[in-house]
Length: 384
Length: 194
Image: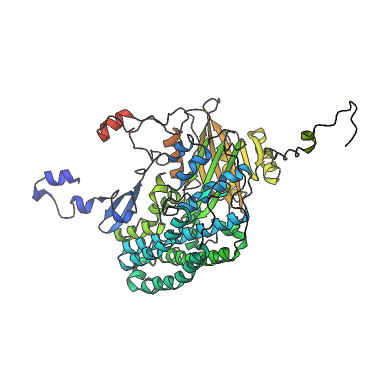
């Protein structure tokens, strides 16, 4: 019985058990303006009481046509635009784009620039994971960790600000290397962050990991198997949380990642708790990488010789990096001209978000919030 | 200084001019030869139009009639179990203007391969959602941006643009300043979004 029929028919005709509420599902619209959707994601839930029977994502509210924009900018002019994809990890996007163009140009980036890039990209991974941790835990009901993570992220953003003048949309790298060298006091500040953040991560752990409410809200919530992850094309910490040992920094090293000693943390159950453990452990590994890169930073040039007007040879290239959210790929098609003929971004958030339907169907409505948080999506990247 | 037949010394600029820096040869695709290509060729003959390596990346250009079979073969026999990306490129001047690109990946071999096929405007492209569930949104995006249809897709709707929008923005003939004026007037209540 539909809602209209229900209200139109006289009360005595409505038999118990035949109201629109218990014969039909309730369709609830969540978002696009909702604090736990981390941006402008709209989710349509089909609910039977508290239980989610179906879920549909509506995206595109932040669509800016970045791929179309690329076709009308030169290769160098487009570089600042990629910062607007995943705006919590702008440095990673910048690295992904620059590496792709360099590969197409067959440019060798100087070693010092590669190390500088690693330091800044891993700092950026720390900042991105801190945003994720604070907001994810906030969604589930713990308010305090948000202030802790944002307090500690501030140190990293200060380094970015001193390095290139911007905190979020940094445009840190240029095609061929880095635009700026390390400023005076850079090493000390970066090493200070490394020393400081380890105990702070212990602090997050003490606040969150053993907490009974946290465990009950995350254990066995939003489970996804390794096979499903691969079928959906999921990458990044979500894939590793399901126990698949896959990290592009290890398997297809770029920008001198082969020089550094670090581990790839893995989960087993593929639930929200495991993904939390994986990301927090990744932060510790990032600190290890930053320390090695800072101590091993050699003297030398920071940018390769690249022509003023970049005209890559005719051809195509696909190049990808391990961004904080997963595999960020760029598929470039050049017709030999000064502008890309086609530029496709393979956004990790877009592809990971697709699995929300699989992960949240059958769970409780409160868990949907936890699952959106654990996928760690950024709508700027989903919608482009 | 060496003697020259006409008695004039060679011009100093010519003698001292530094050798021109060696120009890096332009990268060009080279033929890709391996068991995989041989077996595919023996199975599909001239359906495999091109098998090449460009900047250490392998790609296959296949006939549109066999592209679905080739993708399934790569999945089942060669371990390319992941679909990294699916996208399209528009070449409006060509007879078959839409190039669909499937980027496949094998975790076991740590190897990527790009499969490409050309399609005419309005022609149906076989869906791969039967093999990779993750292709669902990727195909929707290609439909949204290029107007390429994938019959057999479970839910082929626009994904990033509004549902009622007319036109497909990533086609080359779609001007970057173009918009669906009627949609903008009706839904935003303004004359122009520009």
